Length: 290
Image 1 (cartoon, helix red, strand yellow):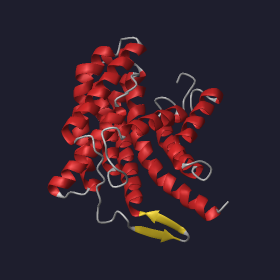
Image 2 (cartoon, one colour):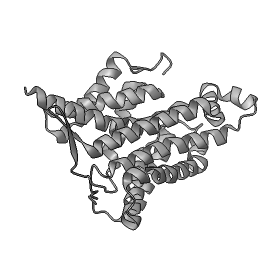
Image 3 (cartoon, rainbow, N blue to C red):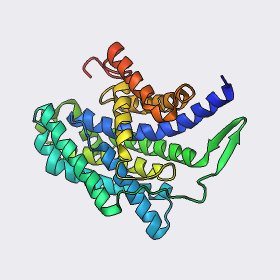
Image 4 (tube, helix red, strand yellow):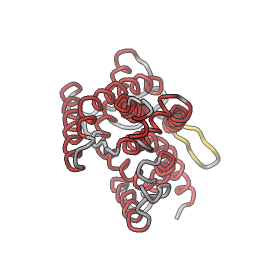
């Protein structure tokens, strides 16, 4: 086995894992606060990608700058979905919640296909093929930028949740909804903001992925499946778990391509997920109640 190749793959996987972490962070935040699994997460990722792609075509703004617009647009979309759909199904049986969110997913995917068409797009930036070398390891500049911005966005979410009033209200509502209501918290508004923040995370991640891969209305599906594996690995509702889990899955999928074709890389992530479910169902960072 070529150790330089393994190191190269591990580095590339680690950088992509940062974007995985941001995607999973949004999914884990929504579940951790509202106990609703957002099956539309992948479709929201696609909308984030298309917003950045459209801005790049119309104005020339780089996707690594327009991630703020993608995050803002998806925050509004997430807020709207929570108010109109999620807020009405939170007390329903889990199976009914799944059906509703799959319906939202299909609406978003088909709307994307109507607006932008079914054909994939492969946008290019002036640095698409740029690289730097660290010893024998080649670092892809777009992946490095995507990683750094994803970590910055994730850090901003942690600061928001820890130090802002609305962030504290989100954590209080997640810990004890009845207690939050008793002290006067507008829980429905808090949930809407929380869902919007989770959607903003995946929207920003979508923008960061634009320079890395083609865009189509169905691009988000494999990322949705991978984010489920990451959330289960890290622990359902655990935000640090989502971050660490994303890096682990990113490296594992990349290094796993030494042994299996890269088109089958999800075998690795779902194999890890099955092992975690068998050996530690609460995940790496989940408590007994997770």
